[in-house]
Each structure stands twice: as C-alpha cells, then as structure tokens.
Length: 191
Image (cartoon, rainbow, N blue to C red; front, side, top):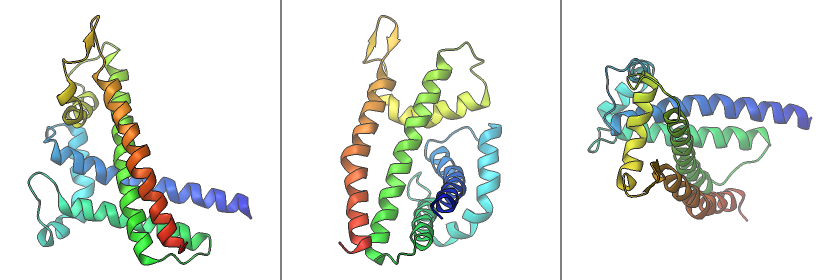
C-alpha cells in the first residue's frame, strides 16, 4: 500500500508543481516586466490569462504585483496540502492549513529562484546568443535578486553575486520557510 501512496504522492506533487510553476513564472514575469514579445512570456500569458482574467476584475494589481496570481498560488498550495492530508486520511486544522499554504508558497518561490539563478549562471558559462528567449526571460527574472550585488563581488573576472544570492536564498529557506512549515504542521495536526 505504501508504494501506491508514494506513487500518488509523486503524481500529485508533479501536477501541482507544474501548474504552480506556470503561474509563478507568470507572476515573476509581470513583476519584473519581462519582455512581452518574448515567445516564452507570451506562452505564460496565453495559458494563465483565462484563469487570471476573471480574478483580476475582483482583485486588481498592487504596483507590479498581480495579487490575483498570488491568491491563486496560495490556493494551489492549500489544495495540494489538503489533497495530501486526505490521501493519508487526516483532517487538518484550518488555521494550520492556511499557515502551511503560506509556508509552502514561500518555500516554492525561494526554490524557484534558486533554480533560476543556477540555470542562469550555468547558461552564462557557455557561448550563447544573448537574444535567445529562454536566456532573456531567465535574465529578467533573476535581475531583481542579483541587481543589489552586481559588480560588488567581482574577483579575477568572475562575478560571485549569484553565489551570494544562492547562499542568502538557502538561508532564508532554512531560517524562515522551514520554521513556518514546522509551525503549520504543528497547527494542522493539533500538536
């Protein structure tokens, strides 16, 4: 039975992870004002807009942050946790579930930035056309995180700002997201 639960857990995490990634990239692309003419940006807008357009009528943007997308991401995280609890036959406390959804969303954003910075750093090592859509999109998404460190951590022609950004993101995951997740689990299970 545990093999079946493991397989279902994997599939649930895969489906929710893919949908969450799509909407998170849309949120980040909007917030960083990524080039809309980029084919990848158009893909993100095309496949997320049918869901977000009705929500935007009720919940408008705040500055460059698409609040309807943030709400949808949080609801996706709540649904994922709720499905996981149901799969294991547990009924979570609603307050704990809300905290867990917030913690999962924060952790997912941090992990996404870790992956994006890693990919951007890796791609910058190889000679590539700087106009490539993936490189342009990833570059615009990681720019706000790397901008404060740019040019300040250069030694021997190497820019160490991505490394420092990765270290800070990992520390935030450890010191903020993990305790928030632990608190959410504790509240959800009523311990």
